[in-house]
Length: 428
Ligand SMILES: Nc1nc2c(c(=O)[nH]1)N[C@H]1C(S)=C(S)[C@@H](COP(=O)(O)O)O[C@H]1N2
Ligand SMILES: [Mo]
Image (cartoon, rainbow, N blue to C red):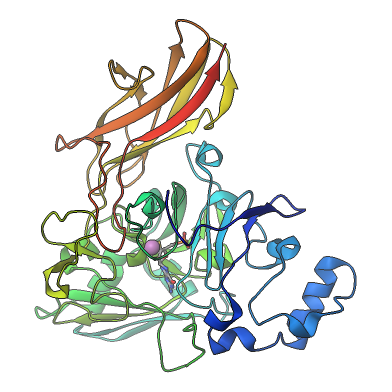
């Protein structure tokens, strides 16, 4: 892991691991220098339980480590903060051990500034563009008009694993934990689009959320992505208003968001207000250039690739995680090993592990997905021949026969790293 962006972790009193942004003041945008508003200061003071003498030196959006839990991470547990503006936090693999990811352990990936008001009252979603009738619905309308379904759906950021790119790729240095599989409740995007009446010319969706651009310019959107109609019409793409049986977490898109399993997380617009049907591929912010795109052909690490040779990422690749034991743990001469495996729009056929650096592989017990779009849980027991240092390696093979490898398919923006996960153990 070689990156100039690597930040020094510190542990805040509430147990949130916080990586203090280390950029020099000169590199900060003008927004950074806006001082905290009084309300913000009051809540910071309340969180600290005392006055903050130098509060006027604290740039806007820049929270002290000890108060990380008041900064969007309230209700989150053990996440590692990669950036506080925009807020980005990932989950260490050993905290992703649950078959269904609790809300407290679901990663956060913001491109802009989350809206202040995320209450469902008065929230509306509109559907427009190449439809027979424009719809504008409250969350109550959605629940009344359409079948409400609950599905476990895997969401992974396209940049998960970027930290291991060499040469490094700029952007959030996600390691393993920008992935989760929570239970989402909502209505099917398909049902809503069909109610609006898709016209023949509608080929792509465009998604709009209520978050603000980092610059503070109200005319600019932080991100607006879309889907080809065929994907938008699959029956496990949800417009969700609940997560794990409760309201969405404010940082996971409350009160309404898309959940598009198997495709880059960026397709799953949070704080969803509008879906437009377009007669061309969407060209909103983070759809074009090199955003969420990879070269059309394999490139050598460090290659410069012309912009016109990039294509939009669609399905996410075959991948797995070892969630028990934790890397660096001590174990007996035998240990349980378990984790998850997934492959966008496909299922996993087998998950094998090795504890002898890849010489021999053993099958594990692999569950089917609890529904289409959910990751698959796997488990086994390993008995080590003698005490010592071992590594557990895991590799998944999907329903199309694609298997994880050691190599990273290097690309300039650091997407789609599905390299095998390894954990080291001191056994015996
Ligand atoms: N409105 C909006 N939606 C968004 C984003 C965002 O910044 N704004 N980030 C996207 C990206 S890049 C990812 S990976 C997922 C992350 O979802 P999560 O924060 O709930 O984990 O949300 C997507 N939806
Ligand atoms: Mo993402």
